[in-house]
View (cartoon, rainbow, N blue to C red):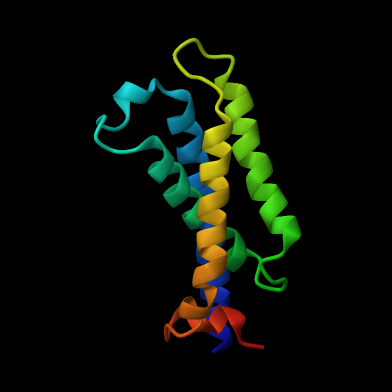
Length: 126
């Protein structure tokens, strides 16, 4: 059980770094080069921040998914928007930050469901 928890923590930290690098790179590329127009930008933001929320929570399991983790994630989303405002082919959007918050909220609401999954419920064990 302790090995599973350690594996989840180390794996989550590695995936978190990879995701932050990837999301940061995608945020700075021209939007038309990334995804077809049929995929909603706001849905992508919500999915990305759901995944980031899960990874932040699992990467640092000694604390619950608390205000500090949420503020960190929203700060990262805000920083992306500020940086995008300096690129002529990107724009800063408050709606994107709202979509980020929706992804974080979705993670909060799914924690009770995740606690039922056999492999990952170890994250919440003592």
